[in-house]
Image (cartoon, rainbow, N blue to C red; front, side, top):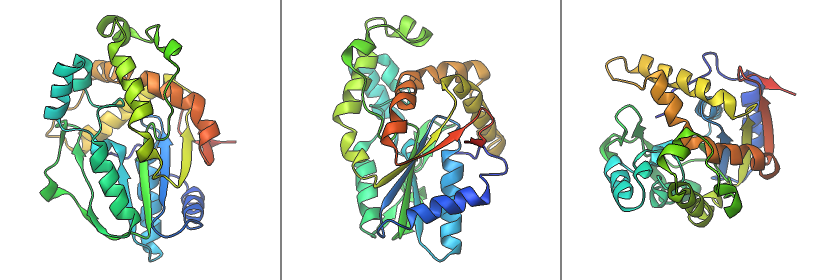
Length: 268
């Protein structure tokens, strides 16, 4: 479950503009919001959904972070494919069947439970605790790498960061993630009818943005242990390769782009 990272949220005119854009689509269409970790995707989606409901529309929100494989399934991938796959995040660590089933039900206007993932516990919540959408006029689907294409094979040769140099020396993990990104995720991307990209200034802002997000998660659940700063710095390295690919490719793929500065303010 995502925690807000914009204390004051996005400006009203931005939220209203996104909703107006969505309402040009047929009922049940899926509107994707993509952006790097901590860019405010969940905040914007929640604001748009709230405004839609205030206008009498039924809005449902699904995050790609809520359809992670549960810890047991990821640990099995870690044993069978590569140890780094036990950590949630990169392509290959999502329950794509669950995501497809959920979006297909929402697109059809059928009632659907909305999966929820507890990041502090690193587990999916029991289905009995998922909220239920009783049909939807509009569907918001947010995530950090929606519609990102795979890299070319030659781009995978050199390690990108300390994680890849020290724990993926032969490149098996990054090649697996890249392969499933190109093979398994396109059916999910095909459910997205329009895509908005929250374009951050570069990957260098992600460690700080993700640290702020972790602090927000901790503040919301003070009884639970969150990641330390050092753990966050390591964690974002799992996302770096695909995030940099998203920054390169998505400006040409997205239907609409909002550019953000390092403070997450919208810039021309």
